[in-house]
Length: 432
Image (cartoon, rainbow, N blue to C red; front, side):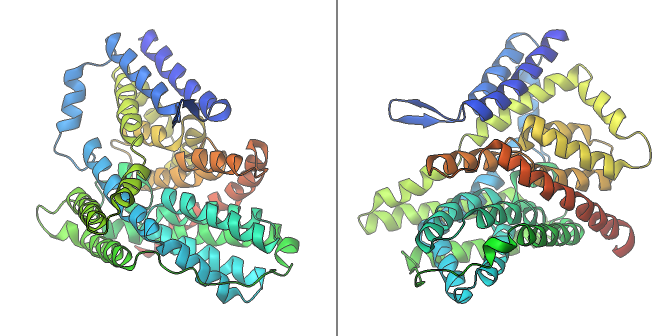
């Protein structure tokens, strides 16, 4: 029992330390983030010490339920592939340039258009992809226009991690925690919390950077053309079809969400490969496939192994008993999931809480989903997107370290948490 607990704690501490002090390792031409390797080694140690059996893990991976980890990975990778190939086609860069032209040299107007463009795109794609796609564009534009990039970077991160909670597909943590929920019921409950949270962050950031956003934009804007229209049209069409099918999947027997997402992702990947071969640009498709965050698979499966072992010794039951005590489960789970995301990262936290939530109220489940999204705002440890985003800014010589992340993140969480709690309360107990 104690050895299992020690391994679990060591893995969590190792992940946090690696994120803060060793976010990336380079061996020759190969670069990788060590956090998933630490989780994998922890999982191997759990199996080796008898903390969890291979038979138990096999049962978890083959169970015919909506929260089967392999089905969840299929949903994530399928929808991510659609988003990545849309970006490879230049679709997101085109939309961002249109937003710049609409601003007419007004930073205040640009900020507003940009914030809600990121919000809308995040709802139907993925917060991680939007953050990693738009960040280079923000840096390029701000440097050329001679304006402060921080309001836009913080706005991008806030919009992507608040509006991401609106649909199940907006964040891998949503998929893991709420995979058993009806797609439309989930959206109806989360619409108000997402809107109130997103708006509260919007007004706060605009207020914090009021002086900076009052300065004019220098230089002439130009519309960036879509690089590959056939690819963009195909990816966008498949994304629309998948979103509609996901919305109606609960009404069609045998049509599970992972079928739809994996089918859409597989179709766009196959199209990109054939199209690239015909056009003599096979590297085009390979670049898109390479951009898919495959490391999420060993990370999620490793954390599942560790959480299963902790559950066998009663840790998850103890956490559940603590969180379910009293009559304020929504607030308790909301606060605990935000804290947990920043102690463990939001994906391991979601794996852990996925077990803790067994038998909990619907309000507790949705509160945990909200916390897994909002928690990313507090520190760069809170989500994979935060880890990758911070690394990207560091490589681009942007002075936005851990302390400054927490400085603005704490303010965002202070306004986001009450807004989310109020929105969830009205959704569950007043409107529906």
